[in-house]
Image (tube, rainbow, N blue to C red):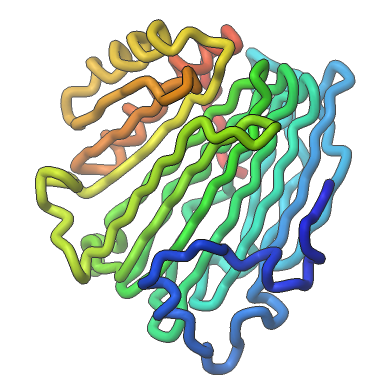
Length: 312
């Protein structure tokens, strides 16, 4: 795996092109500052296939680590299911995470998390996560983590960079919950930014997407944002193998069976695939709709349904 900067270089795990607001948050953290042991989580995994997808390269730095691959998808017994874990139990101010995932030719991987990602309260800094995903020729990559739960005053920046071969397929999904509703926290975080950028192996941009929510400075209840809903989910089915128009129709039909949510599917630029955005009143309703679209995308891409993966 090629690393532009050494793992100990802050440029390796610190996001560039940060929004202006996040630059203002970048203050010294008392007790355990950014860059200290335990504050920088690194994970590098590479998968290759010899008929079964195997983990062939692995580097981890606490608090990030992974379980060994499991082969529990009944429709694709060759597909590696991998759980990413965080030893800290949640994300703190000043934390910087970076994950590098490479699927070599013909590899098939489902990457998820063991549990929801909790973003704890932050008053001196912010937390960030960089995801570098590479889908090689004829590979199949799924990144579907459990939801993000932002606590009061949390500040979180995430950037997902997907590099995908024209013969590969990737399914990326994410869900943002309103926070600890039982504690009276409903979108009480300070700032959440999620960027997704997809390119070809030669660097050509296919599409970019940004979610930028700052409840402290702008109302989320407006029609152009969350409206009356609390839960937001996104799904990107990135594939130049599938016909975007046909895939879009299939995903829209799957969403029609979930009247409790507000959702839409649309073709991505440059024939890159289809994106889905889901809004709903509860995590249960959104989770059901997200699973339905994931299932339909999987059927279209590899001909087998989405498995019911139990968390260890």
